[in-house]
Each structure stands twice: as C-alpha cells, then as structure tokens.
Image (cartoon, rainbow, N blue to C red; front, side, top):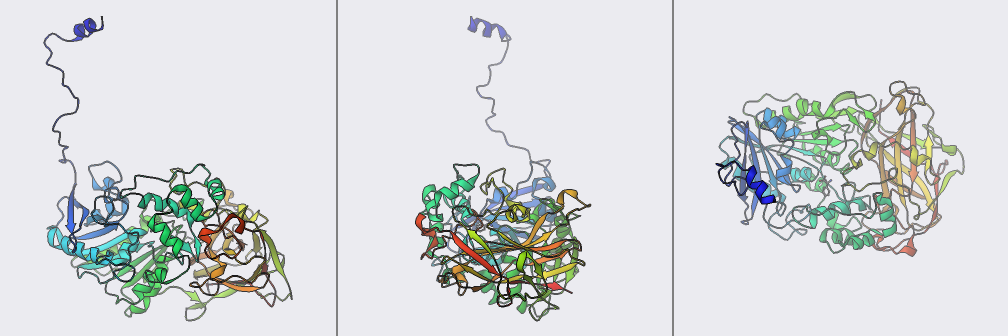
Length: 630
Ligand code: PG9
C-alpha cells in the first residue's frame, strides 16, 4: 500500500529526484561582501609555518596592518556576527580599526589551532628557560617581515595589539622589534605570573586556572572543557583537597604546565626570568607603546601598570610610553559597552570613548603616512566614583615620595574604626578564627567554573562585599562618613601587623568604598561595599618571595601587600572600609596554616584552624598607605 501511495504522489513526468539535497559543487558568493579574508601560512626561520587570517576591507591601499597573535583561535578572533560587512562581521575593535583604514591580521601562535609547531604556554624568550631557537619575539619579527613584503595593500607599517595572552605576545613584539613595527598596544597583558597576574598572587596559587590549563593544553584546539561534578564548584574544590589533589582528580597532574607551577611555588629564577616588566626594563624603548589597564581586571591586574612603570625611565622625551586606565573588567576596553560593570555605572561608554579618542588616534599618529601627531596625555585615567577622565603627565600621581602628591596612611583602629590619626592605645587587636574547613569564599556561592556559560566571573571584583563582612572570620574596619571627597591615584600599600597561632597563613586585604546608607541616585546601591583594590599575600613569602619561611606562631609580625593601582574618588557621604581575612576560596588554594614544604602537596591532616590577630595599637599601627591626591 505504501509504495502504491508514493507512486501516486509523483507527477508522471517528474525528473528523477536528486539523491542528495546538498549540491555537489556549491561556492558561496562573496559578491556582496565589503571585505575579503586572505588566509596565509607564514614560514618562520626554523621552517615552521604559522597561520594568519588577513582581513582586507575592499579597496584599501597604503594601509597599515594591525597585527595580533593569539592562542585562542585566529578564526574565532575575527568573528562576531555572520555579515557581509566588516563592521558587523568583525569584533568591535577590529571593525572600528578597519573602518579607520587598517588591515587586520590575526595569527594562531605556534602550536595552536591552524599553526604548526609546538605549543609552550607563554613561551619564554630563547635562553635558559627556552632551549629552542624561536620565541614570540622571533615569530613576531618573521611574521612582520613577511607581511610587509607580501601584502600589496600595505604601507609597510605594522602595529601590534592584543588582550591578556595577546597582550603578552604584544609585549614580546617589543623585544628586538622589527623596523616596520611602529606602535604597540598591549591590553591587560600577562606580565608576571607569580606576583599578580594569572597563575599566582604573591605566592597564593590561583587554582581556578586549572580550567584554563585543561582547555588550553589538553589538545591544540581546545576541544575539551573541564567538567566539575557540581554546578557550585565550591564543593568540588573543598572535597578535592590541595590543588594537586584536584589536578589528580581531573587527570591533569602530569600536564607540563601544571607540573611547572607545582615545582615553582616560590618566586624563583623560573618566574623572575620570564617577568616581562623586568625584561622590558632592560630593553631600549624603540616602539611607541600604549599600555591599556583595567581597574577591575580579574585576571591580569598587575601587568599593565607594572610594564608602564618599568619602561617609563627610558621615555626621556615623554613621547613613547603611554597608558590608559579604564573602569573595566579584563578585556572590557574591547567590548561594545564600557558603560557599566556589574552594578556600577560609569555614566558613559568608556570603552567606545577609549577606542575613538585614544586607541585610533594613537595608531594613526604612528602608522599612517603623514598623519598628525595625536593629542594624547602620557596617562589618561578614568576616575571611578567621580566618573571623569583625567589627563596626567605621569603615573602614579601620589606615592611615598617623588610624586606630585604624597601618600597618606589611614589606620585600622580599635572597635573596627578606620581613621587618619595613628592609634594611641597600648594593646589592641581584632581577632578571628580562620578554619580551612570553612574557607571564606571570594564571592557568594554558587561559584561557577570560569568557563561555565552562566558565569559572571568577569564581574566578581565589583561584587558587593557585604556577604564577607557578615562572616565571623572576616574583620572589618570602617571610617566615619566622609565630610569631603578623598581622591586616590596610584598604588595603595597595606602595612599591617598580625599574629597567627599557626605557622603559615594567607592574608587578604580589601580597600572598599561604602556607599551611603540611603542613596538617591541608585537606591539599590544603598550601603553597597565596592572593593576598589584588594589582594592576597601568602605569609611564608613575607620576608623573601623567593625563600619561604614558617611564620613564628603567636608572634606579632609585620606584613606588606602592594595592592592594585587605583584611580578613584571616595565621595563625600561615603565611608572607607578595610576588610581582612585569611582565605579567598576557591579562586586561591587554601593555606593549610601549618608550614609544609610545598602547599601544592599539603595533606588533609596539615589543614588546621588558626587564631588570627590584626593589631591596631600605637606599637603596631596597622594601616593602608593611600595614594591621596591633594
Ligand atoms: N588571562 C588569560 C591567561 C593568559 C595567560 C595564561 C593564562 C591565562 C587570558 O585571558 O589570556
């Protein structure tokens, strides 16, 4: 019956039905596109070929090339929306640069995606840490050399740009730069993996980056993502134990990049030898550079200001070393909107403003034939709190000595006070019990993995800190309501005195802007505790980052934490707050609070409760040196 019905449905004269609905030789038409993508394989000096996508707007001539090098896929890097016009097809920064007359070139770094060769994470320069004869400096040089000789539409000038890992490769372009390299824009670069960027902060291990390790080194094209057994990864981490226990559980304890971190927990020659601020401090400053820093950079908050400061002494004419500081999360300067971060509103699209008023004029001035000089201040800084841009001729604007303003201590006081006068009481401290079995979380639970599609990881640094204040194992010090604004522009430094009943401890210090108890401009922000600068120190490195030592139990010991740079105004009516705690879990692995040779391999029995005291007396005046601008 079925075959009779089918036969009846066919018209008598029908041509035979095609076997497949997919044509044998379809070629998509590019006729309506206003750009072409040219794919090239560029040979390096050792014969390895690296894949580059060149995005060429129709009709461009004599155009400079903007060159990025990424481990995250050169195909993905040039893809925003499916469109015939580059304005929509390209991610916003590239689209705006293409609109301004640039050719975009994006390369897969050696060993990733469509490039040949071996991948080494953040491959150091050739030398004791890199026995090969190629590195990012040579690969950039060879690529630029090829591009200026083989892209007929170019004027022979190249600018490098990139975010994070791409910021790191951009900084590498400054080491022995190719003569055609006319400008560089490192954005939120990985600079020092131990002091304050992706891998550690002052010796505390950022174990959440096991996500990255898994995704980036399990294979060459990031096919695999870490699977946690819980949506709220807090429980997964707590149950696992140490960072190496977790790595074992995930089957990645033998991954070379994990083993390297576990073998170098201290700031030894391995880390110091690849710290790019130290390296670039020794290089001549040949290429005008615009450092882009995000004030709430959840990944590389150390890098940009550190390299700016390291290169500044070479900039004798004050014409080659520039920095812009924006109110952004990691990479937000490249996002369509920089108007808000989490609950905090900046009153205007700061990312778009940076691109049109700073980035493009900077590249134009250095890469376009006969372009006028850009009217850029050496440092352009957004002042959060006041929501205004400032033009500065230097950075920092306030420090202990040698800056236009001098930093000013704000002291922790008894009874949770905070004030400009040094304490006069003879003995005083705030006490809490830090229990590794109930660590203080870095944000409210649930804590999603960094790559969970629902994650708000990029916003965590602006989370309301009231959840932490409510815990008994966090001590809080807060000022009176401010009767006038307090402006900061530079690096706050926490100098405090503490004791622990254990023999090792972590210390987390947070500098917080407390919004008024009633707040008419945005009632939902009443009482909000906005952290403007915070960081962690692993106590064993208090004296020497390269040589850990046990903390003498129950003795008062001085600590210093250089907190991330701020450009902020505490407005009249707000209060200044400091919180101190001993864990920031699970972003950072837990300190067992018993001194062990290597915390990566701490055993369950090493994790012990400890009684912590933060001293607030005349003898032990704990304080934050604030970079106050008069
Ligand atoms: N912050 C990221 C990273 C760089 C280098 C190593 C590990 C992570 C990034 O966004 O590229």
